[in-house]
Length: 491
Image (tube, rainbow, N blue to C red):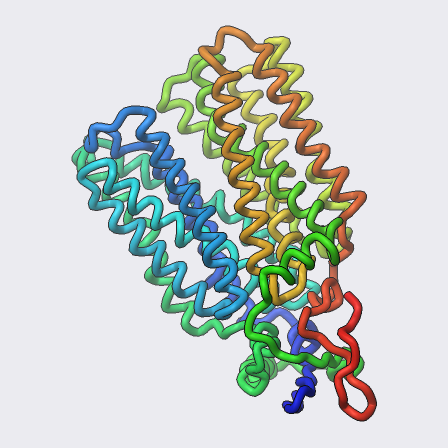
């Protein structure tokens, strides 16, 4: 039992060790389903804007349609930065309820738009919610899932973005068919797909507890104890006998409400500079490659292989399927083979396959089918690698700054990644020259391979380890035999 000592003394807690020793149970499925929906919602949103069914109804130009996507991404960056700090200060549960509610309102009201500026406003609000979701959800999942399952769960959940994208594509296929729905009606209904799913999930999230790990660092040890006892009781009710807790894993925590910004800078650039470099590199490289290919693949199919818009839409599905099954099939290997080896392997293989396809593209040896096949194989690996980037930045920094770490790296990645579509759109041109796009692909593959090499050199072997063993909490202290506080534990 945690001991609440006052007058400058610490709270003794075994909660992290108790959470990590749990077997997989119904509770963990509830966490995965209730929190993992966020990436599905994001995939739906991106695909709906890409379909641009609202263009004629609102009298928008192509540039204005493009800005509808841009304003959503800007909202994500602002939301991640703003809600990231609140996630660390107010708690994971408050934020994953608040941010989902913001998304529900933003996406739903956008479906009522009658003019472009109204659409922009509420697309920005929807982006705010999803950006905040990234920080709160990644933090909560990593802190609630046992260490031996954390890698595969985080990677699989992040990969479900592509399930959302396919759902959005299917919805658009029917709802934007003007023989079934009026031109001014179908796209509005499409914007309600995400909110309807979200309304169902928000009720499930009410039953997901606050992270007990976060609660202990904020002095809520008795409440955290009650939550963990409830989880353990539900596991025992399934007929499982829990192993005893290793008392040597006990930690002493001196709670703090928030971490000063100066301390945050100190953590990133003095205590963990190599991890900061690792996180930024992984996030930026995957974001650049993804945005560059995803937002221009239709242009490549139309301009170089002369497919029409209807045909290019069909090619999206095998591309998305490759992105979805990669994290699902490769995810368990991040917990067994190991983080460093798997990140290196997925990044390098994704870049290598793209490089081969670039050469064949330049030689004119590919068709629309074979080029899409190469993309499927490349992004089978890239999708798992990209998901591992989110896993990495959420588990290699102390608990008290986890939400902010995710938010800052996510924001940098989105800003840099947003240049990918612009650059590759220019390289595609009218489809008259292959050399510019060939060199673009070479750079893209090189960027991804570089990310893999950095992960091999600077990666953290986090597989199977408790979060507190990977990066000790900032509030962790050493306690003498007499019970007085000693110097802060080394990290």
